[in-house]
Length: 254
Image (cartoon, rainbow, N blue to C red):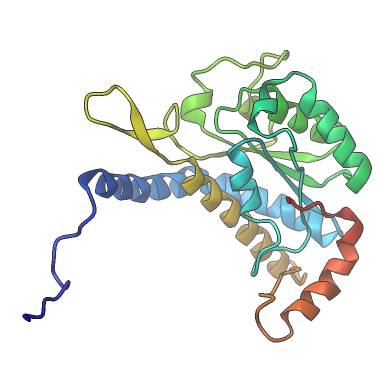
């Protein structure tokens, strides 16, 4: 039987997948260029809080919860990252008053200290739940970082009683640069689109924010509290020693 080689062969991926990869490449470049200054400021805010023994809080409702989880309890990441868990899932983010009670219960159980940073993720930036969490964090003298799509949020109306959107509430805004509706590519002549992008740029932004915080702590003479892989020798023991300091303050998703 004649042997064949894949080297130089055309990719078996569809044109739709190839266009998605191109869109992702362009999105990464645009996201970094757009957010470089904001990321530096966010990293400093997180680093200063952690240097004083603080905790970084993250919240996302529905699919945004996937982005929030990106930086929670993972090898190479920061130990003191706590999730404001949303047991209601995506449906609850449109219920007025839900986010306010959610933050109040979280702060009562795990604490939220002045100067600590809360990263709130909402692609549309318009629904009540994430806005109420952001407002709760600000009322507790926290620093709010909003991760949102400005191309979408600036063209939509808020569902919150204040009439404000996340980018109008947050102290720092990280723009994931995704198009309105998130999906980027049309499917034939159906009028529908596919290829959502917000997870790609959202996770990138959160990782960059963490890296900027680590860099700030190093430059300021602090040792960043980093997790090791539990699968490496001594990893679990290292993580247990660091986590003991924050044990009563860290909430983890199930």
